[in-house]
Length: 199
Image (cartoon, rainbow, N blue to C red):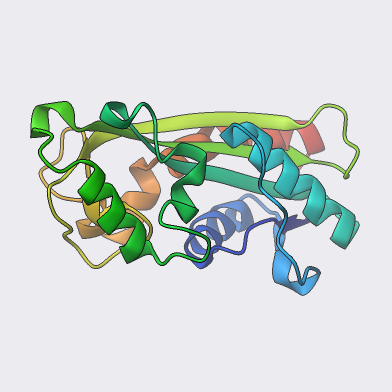
């Protein structure tokens, strides 16, 4: 089966395409079909994932998988949330977003810096699929007081997963792909995708 992976984020492409391919899915890049990103104006991770999946399906004429994910910080009432990638403004670099988050949490004690990475994965058979496959998962932890680590992307250098004494960016890539929010969503998503399309 061929499908298009509806993301322009290189980190997500790496994490998702290998695991989808391992299930017998031939993954094509959104960039093969699209010159413009979808306008992510949904109010939830699921809404944005659906927008991206339907956008890619229109452009490619293929089934599409999209992910929308981000970091929700308890002390900030769930921010940056769906705005995680553009927290410091449109086109902001990961480091800019991390610095803004650190500034927003200045003076907040470690015990009150609880957070969770959230991931929603969506599969649509076509742009007008009335019954998309939707799976969501979370990865709890806390926001550290400084950045640490060289792996990963996004807020990984600031996020300390529950039960670990290092940042997500200090985990080996294969370890993160086993325990992250995206990994948890995929663990639930892939068997349902296989059942749905008969891989």
